[in-house]
Image (tube, rainbow, N blue to C red; front, side):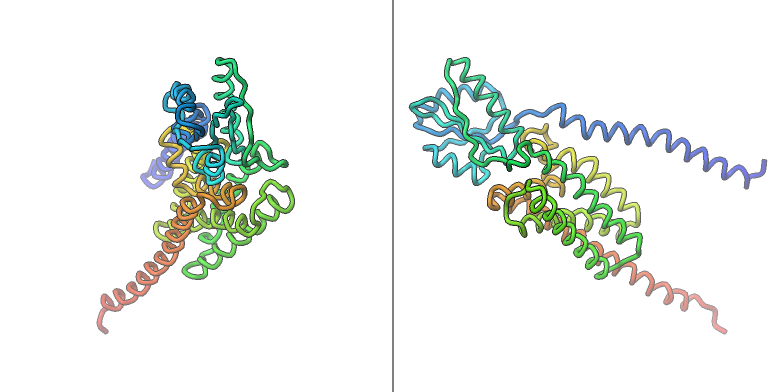
Amino acid sequence: MSATSATPARTQTRRLIAVVVLVPVLAALALWAFAWPAARTAPRDLPLGVAGPAAATVQVEKQLAQHKGAFEIHRYADEAAARDAIEDRTVYGAVVVTTQGPELLTASAAGPVVAQMLQQAVAQQASADGTQVRTVDVVAAPEKDPRGAALTASVLPLALAGITAGAVVTMLGLRGFRAVTALVGAAALVGVAGAGIAHSWLGVLTGDWWAEAGTLGLATLAVSGAVAGLAALVGQAGIGLVAGVVMLFGNPFSGASSAPQMLPEPAGTIGQWLPPGAGTTLLRSVSFFDGAAATGPALTLTWWAALGLGAVILGNALKGRTKTAEPTVDRQLAPVG
């Protein structure tokens, strides 16, 4: 067998080994990324308020402290202050000590799973003391999506839309400001279409329509800009790198189905640094809480989008310099006739 014929055979063997090894590794990584947070869902320093006279709330705080590391206690003077804290997204709920007994304030709009967990934890403790707890949903989830299933389901389509937009712009060869225009335009249309479906048609979003459209568009642009930007700097491999981070870490670590504080660390924190998690938090804020606590996730998405679009322009500029330098080198090396 000649050396020429042996080379393709070796190449095919290496590719075969790569497929056999990489596919199980990727499958295991994906299973870990999605299954680990789901299997370890539990409150971890979940912000929870306790309201009432200091002497009356001591016993409640002691009972909550028995759930070691579960709750981060915030103290409020009365029920009105606790309600304000819930509406400002400072806490997920509050236990109010009244003369009629304990009262639990929740916000199912912030996460139905969290609200249900709080009801179970407080009711269980109250039943042990022989008392009953009245539950009040201060900021309720929309009637057409009481379990938050539609909002949770929106995370993956937005991520896919961003990845697709960034990949298409790259594959079509759009560069510089043309690529930026295409990415911004596509994200804006995704935002309008998303708000039209989720708010106008399904009724699962109930806030300001344009704020919701802007959030959906910004979340899409954060991903598409990162995809196209990294691809402009390192080539088409950048598409796979960003897509892998968003799909394998961004989606399962987003806390969309529960809350960031319900995920094992550092998954909850990492998830809020990535577009899916920041986008979900921002969408909840603008849709159900009049924009409360929206600054952090909005800045996160803006940074992703700005850095991505900046990388698109930078990558185009670097390629332009390279092409300009090549003819100059060729002329310098050309023989003198």
